[in-house]
Structures are given as C-alpha cells and as structure tokens.
Image 1 (tube, rainbow, N blue to C red):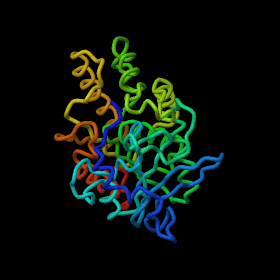
Image 2: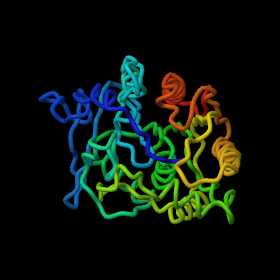
Image 3: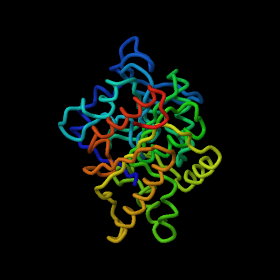
Image 4: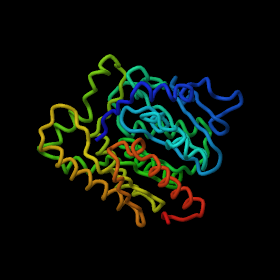
Length: 314
C-alpha cells in the first residue's frame, strides 16, 4: 500500500524552518554543511534536496508515493524531532532526502521540485535520482533507503547503477510480486483506488504524483532478470498493523492484502543471501513515523557493514 499519509498541521509547522532553502548556510553545498535548496538536473528542471551530517557512505532517503522528502524528518506529534530518521542518521554520516515532482507533506506543503507530466514510472524516478546525485556531486557508493514506492525506485536504481549502491534498507516496500498475488480479482480495484486515485483534498493539485505501477512492475521484472541485485548489506522492514484503506474496499479485501504484502516482504528478503528481515511489531505502513528508532537501527547496521567491507549485515 502506498497511499498518502496525512500529517497534522502541527507536525508540518515543527519542521517549517528545516524544510526551506533559507536555512542553508552561506557556504553549504550538497556535500558539506546543512544544505536545503534546489539542484538543477538539466532540461530546465530542478529537484529540491536537503542534506546534513558528515561522513561516508552517504545515505539517500527515498520517500513513498506522493510523500515529500521531509516525511523522514517530520514527527507526527510533539515528539522530539531529533528522534526522526533524518536527524538521527545525520549523527552517523551524511544523509540526504529530496522531493520528487508532485509530492506533498500536506495540503499546503507541495513539492518544491519542478513539476513534470504525469503519470510516470519508477524508472523515470530512478533516472531523476541518478541525475540528482551527479548534479549535486554526492560521492558514491550510497546506502539507499526506500519506503513503499521508494523501495521500488531504489531497486530500479540499483539495477541500472549497481556500482553506485553499497547497501539498502527496504522500509515496507512495494514490489512487483504484489500484482500477480492480487490478480485477477483484486488487482484492478487495488490499483485504481489505492495507488492511482488521488485523495479528495488534493483534487486541486494538478501536478500530484501518479505512478503507472503496471508499467513500473514490468520494468522491474526485466531489470531484475537482466541485472539481479548484487550481494550487499540489505535489511527489509515490514509492518504488522493493517493498512488504512480508502473508502470503496469490501471488508474481505484487507486480509487478502495483508497476506500478499507479507509474501512480497519475504520475497524482498530473499533478493540477496544474508539479508535481514525485521518485523516492526508496533507499526503500520509508515514505519519511519511509527518506529523511527527501528529504521535508524537498520540503517546503522548497513552503514557499519559497508564501512567494514562486508557484503551482509552482521
């Protein structure tokens, strides 16, 4: 499930200063200092990037469907924002997050990146990520962390640029295996209402991100066949609390989706030998908000493995 998370207005306000380009120090760059600003990726387009911390490997946080990059740094309540994934990882190494076109943090907090025509595929998003990392002069190889749709994007990136990826964390990520598990009866409904349909409150946001998942899954299958994921430190995190489904689903769909989701999480954990699969027992789909410490710990294990030259997490 990759539906948009609605964040309360108080949570948005807590990170208002962090999420504006104005907080960047005069000499800050994507490689140094607390940077927040737009980076030109060519073709008259720019992507909003935020980075902080020092050290290598650089960690790149890829958000889920229609979520801005600051979903990784914005608490849902008055909890100390230092406990969130972005702030916590910045104490370990350099960490960056960015806005894909058409993403949001709330109704009045839309993407700070250049709009593009929709729908897109996750291959389009992975290509944008590659351009951004090059334009920002962020040295690889990277540790990629992807939530939900972001998990599919970083896998697509890894297939196209295997030498640029040192480790990965999949945070309740969607995968191409979900489609055959829900076909033929449930996939059209799930795709239409949970993946494609925009929440009513975003009806006026004509640039809202829309992903063609059928095409994206087909691309990922071909990429996986042509360039299987190399052996690297990989942690897969999956939820326990059932998805909050939008209106229009019959009651008997939820258990079907939960079984299918558990299956694809197990499939992700079998992508490379030695991968770890951690079940977030107190989390729904947004593990980085419900249990940010669990996500930070997973990233920390991958960072340590990369620094020690290991191809699996200890």
